[in-house]
Amino acid sequence: MKNPTWQKDEIIIVMDFYMDNFERIPGKDSSEIKKLSDLLNKFRNKNGLYGDAKFRNTNGVYMKIMNLRGIDERYDGKGLQSSSKGDKEVWEYFFDKKDKLKKAANKIKEYIENDNDLGINLDSNIDNEFEEEASEGKVVTRIHQTYERDTKLVKKKKDKVMKEKGKLDCEVCGFNFTKIYGERGNNYIECHHNKPVSEIGEKGKTSLEDLSLLCSNCHRMIHRNRPWITVTELRDIHNADI
Image 1 (cartoon, rainbow, N blue to C red):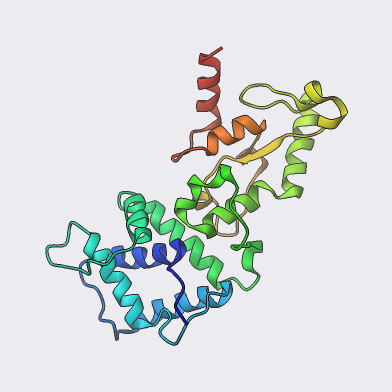
Image 2: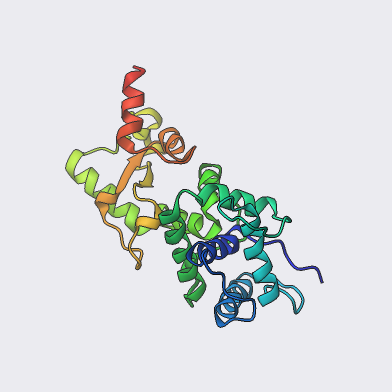
């Protein structure tokens, strides 16, 4: 049985380990590498990534670390020269974003250790609006999707705005679904989580002030590229073109 390709989430965890231990990489028979191997195998078991007895064992994990070392221009010696496309993509995205790497790795580890799965389905397709965010791995992307689609939280946000303003206008362009589509558009608008997942508390708690109500077009414009722009920045762009 051929072992599955390394997932970005797994490479993120390994890169986080590598960056923490750059000066002195533990040996492949060390307890640190064994612990990392065990963690990756838990990810495997949680997501049905089945392979042979060598799957994410200490030799394979150590080799993946050396793949990253082969990319690292700071290293004077030679790592392995067989880095994958996924290795290079994760490295290029996170190398100058060490805080973001640590936060993303911690979110993935939290998902691995959490018995209730955090409600994440890694097998389902990622929506177009979230494709760019997938640079941080499927776990982080799924968590963000889950927050933005929390029906109870979205309802509370809508109810609050409706009580205060009597209507649900897009916070960027002012589009109102009810005004344009009548009863069919009544009470419809999308909800955007202003904070990146990495900045959300460990328990995943958020406040209504962290959410913005947007029309579909403006929502996609915010998610289209990394780094995201804020609602205020998109509003400035929109108003400048009027």
